[in-house]
Image 1 (cartoon, rainbow over the protein chains, first blue to last red):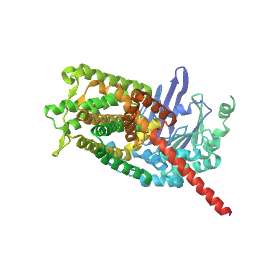
Image 2 (image 1 turned 60 degrees about the vertical axis):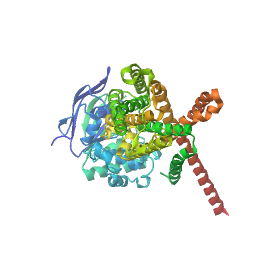
Image 3 (image 1 turned 180 degrees about the vertical axis):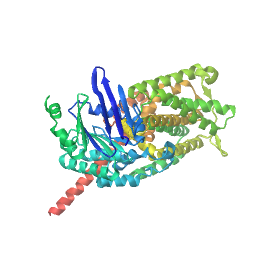
Image 4 (image 1 turned 135 degrees about the vertical axis):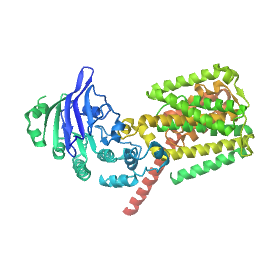
Length: 247
Length: 326
């Protein structure tokens, strides 16, 4: 079966600093792949190279076998690839509902039909369902900027799912979220994964979150892939323990 | 829109309709200028307030629109066609300028657009064979629409008000469509917008070109309003004045340009009684306004209404608490 995402020999250097160094991996359909590593190990740079936010210095990225190295983020999104960012990225002046409609509207019709079509781009019901799925119904009309941090994180994740993507890359979804909200977020992500058979790649520091959610884990350190395996193997791997605790 | 907002809009619309019946010709000229410049300010609000791109070229687009009409109507082109040509030309020029210019942002974009305004001014001044240079063009006729002559000041005011209404409604409708949401997304977080599939470059260009086109349509009314146009009218001063209108009214607020243009057109006139000091006072008033309400007059109004509502809600809670205690 073709990998949903394939990365071969990816390298990204900023001057003399090599942030990602010869990284190769594949993401299989339907799996939840975790990428962990200490701060500065190149996880977010790897994401940004895969998603067109940064141009890789070398290497290749493939979505469903099709080479997409250097493609623009908006074009990748239309291929069914969605993401969240490490720092919170909602649109604070728009309502929760409008944030969600915005997240899906570019997948509806053409630019001209969006100008002359319905205000909600035909996504009103889909947005309502997503709001309910993430249990944000009571906040639907509130401005996203007025929500608590945890609620905004949920909205941020919900936006990544709005266009029905096949591959979702989540960059530290649990960062700064309290324990109750964390359980809720994990449970919603798992529910979405089961329901839609979507493929996830998750960068995360919160080990418990990764171990409970992911089916396979990659470990990055100083830009290189140092280990790969099931969560339990990774937890016991001496190289990983060394990378996390040895500094 | 809230009930209060609707009421204010209705009252303002009635005031705009009855005002010319109580004004002398100069007063009618001023409110006509307001109607015409509001159109350009709506365009700039789209570019700056919604899509977040600072432009100092709006005055140049008003100039291009004004010269288009002033050059086309004397050779027999009907006003309606010349008016549409002004809008289309400015859309095309805006697109052409935006394509390279929008690769840079913020103060860099301000400088690129400033250079464009200077360039347009130089072309208008130096290409005498086309624009008559510093001598300008006089006597651009006011149109006759379906047998209705708009030659009289009051008629031309109503014509401008009608065009302003049509263009405002069109803009309102566009901002309510998914495009409006996309424009706000461009302003608030272009990086995230891009990752959600928005072709940010195309939307930004669209906002810039439509904004420029509204500048051109405003100019197309400006020429028959003042009936004498010359390059200086469209130099940097006008671009700054339009920028001021958008910011004073409240950038990113649909009604901001209406209020901003009113202030920019009327305030200097009201301050004329102070004779030589009027420009100093005008500048001081603008500085105070910007220092204490950078979100513009509508932002200030929103803040006042919110605090009044908050106080009322607080008072109700206190009364209830006292009632419960007794």
